[in-house]
Image 1: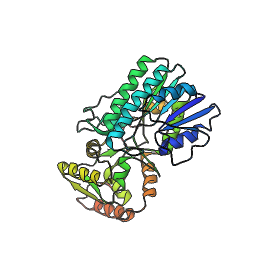
Image 2: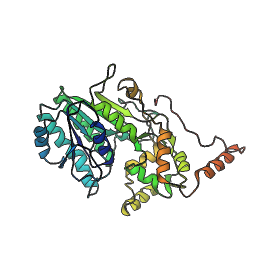
Image 3: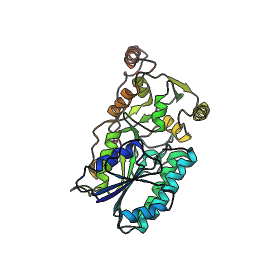
Image 4: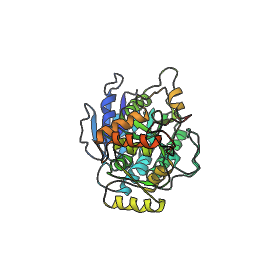
Length: 356
């Protein structure tokens, strides 16, 4: 790992965990933790800099501290401070542009790690069963965080062409869950009753917060022998879960509604501030998304400690019991499956060929 590491988004929960983690690396001399808001958690011995990556001051900060490794975690679907969707987009897109411009001018920068999302693939009815890193999306995201992630990756590719001497690693994370998640999907899954799209039961993948921190550390270091941590990698736990399985394991009933009505439900939820139920999230909860993690294992050399099901179990335990006890729901589903017209098995974890 580089001796002087700058981490953006340090006020976020994952950013704070990563800042604390890399300080334990003996090859790191200093860690510069940067965010536009003051963190509510401890950052250890890191030097915290209160700054907005949307401002040109980021170039001065890189130069003053002779930063050689930049870990850009300030790409998110939710604002870390005051401001709505406009502020989030500006931080994601304009902030990334400013940061990359500063990195391009800094001769000291040798490695760049960028947190992205599998949202870049979108969700469409004719999607392939499994996306690889080179699979083009059937329909590019038209808005929300998914579109931000597409634009961010476009700017990162441009930076990589202009600075071929810099090792660039883009990590496309599946839905991040765990005991302390901070995402629109986690907000949705916390609702007492889950609105779903009538006639659809999407496949979902999750990655645990602990695995996110682990793989970020791998990406920020010099590659281990026999591995390569430059390029673009899908990051997800093994296996998939259906949305119906998620609702049963949470003990939260679902309310299936027609697709046009889901948009109205999303608008109502945003109005009362419960969750960011964006059109892209509606597409995810309609068509789902599964990605291949072959490159994550064979090239990056990373193997998650948690499967998708284990990650979701950790999240479910942190949320507490829902309206319906999961055990009772599971028994009821099992009895229905035993009926002559039940047609199917009780709640089981589905795995997808090629998703590993």
